[in-house]
Amino acid sequence: MTALSCRNLTKSYVMGEQGTPVLHEVSLTIQTNEFVAVMGPSGSGKSTLLHCLGLLEPIDQGELSVLGEPADALSDRAKARLRRIHMGFVFQSFYLVPGLSVRENVLLPLFINRVRYGRDTRVDRMLGQVGLTHRADYRPNQLSGGEQQRCALARALIGQPDLLFLDEPTGNLDSKNGTDILNLVGEAVKNSQVTAVMVTHDQAAARCCDRIIKIRDGRIEHISDNRLLADKEAADEHA
Image (cartoon, rainbow, N blue to C red; front, side, top):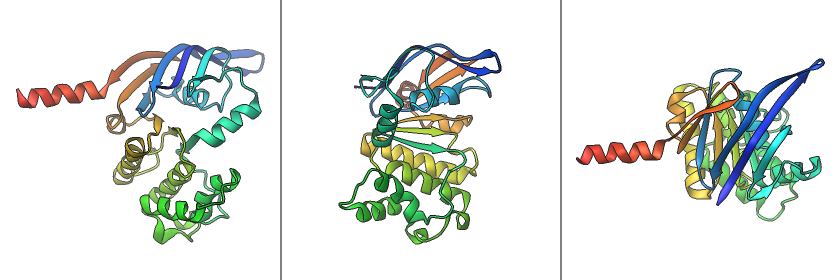
């Protein structure tokens, strides 16, 4: 099943009286249960593409499908509902609510979606999965960077989203904490049928993904399949 697809997606930003093109007729398809990396130099349009796929930014032209349904012409209210129910977001800067505890930050999406039955159990389970049970009552400013990002990831996953969007999730972390975050995302893709799209500059992080989409100057430059490479390496080892 196709989780995300776009055809001839075009996006510009208006600055003053002139529009600055950012994405030029981008076409791609991401299947359900894939973990995909989007890479490219600064200013290439990779974060803008992520925001368009996640319905955070409107597109100018083209077609956009989310979970098999046309999404480019949806109203703002319908897009917000789709994000709230079916999507989770993790950003480089964490965006935790400073006045809330770790538990309350993770609980927030369930509260917004008016989930009442079993939500405390779900939060406890999620905190255990990301290794933050002992930090449940801490405020974000009492956490390390790695702990803050794990809290942000737990918050993104607590609603059991179909789609997970990550914008440089390891950018502010050391290698160990970055690896921990990638492992948690990989487990979510493997065990919870989540489709994950991650913008990253980190080659090591991208190698954890199923495919790598490289963007330059707002256009797709190359798509590589890490699964095929892994299969080839395995075959070479047994040759």
